[in-house]
Image (cartoon, rainbow, N blue to C red; front, side, top):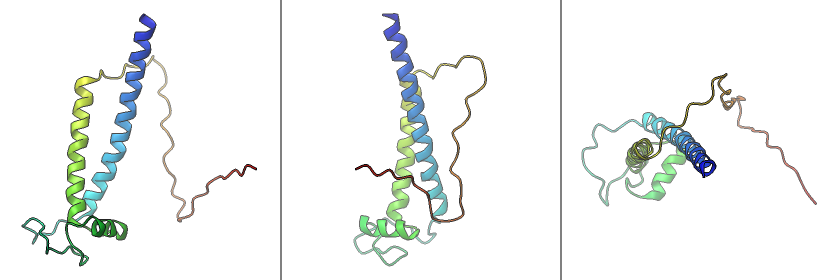
Amino acid sequence: MAAVSSEHDALVAELRLLAEAVLDRVDLAVQQYAAAQHPDPEDTGAAGAGDTGPSGGCAWCPVCALGALVRGEPHELLTRLATQIAAIIALIRELLARYLPPPPAGPAGPDPAPPPGPTDRGGGFVSIPVTIRP
């Protein structure tokens, strides 16, 4: 029975590490988006049906928000969504800390090498290996 418990603890620790890694990446993307957006100092009210965003579209429509995201423009709906996602990430982190035990310290020895980061090749082309099977 002890083997099942240790396997369960190892699985829980791995799932927690996976969840933390995913949250780190999502949090980084949300923070980068929020930092790139400049809040409009004249925007003091909530978006109504007739409000327009900086690109001439509406401030509440998901289609206009998607268009602004593709163009790299700020949009009120995206900014509010980024704020809510950041709050959800903080809540999930708190739940992980409260209900899952911290990952056990590994055996003494060298730390595993961090995964290689993405390399910037200076262009938009990314080589993808393709295998064609008959």
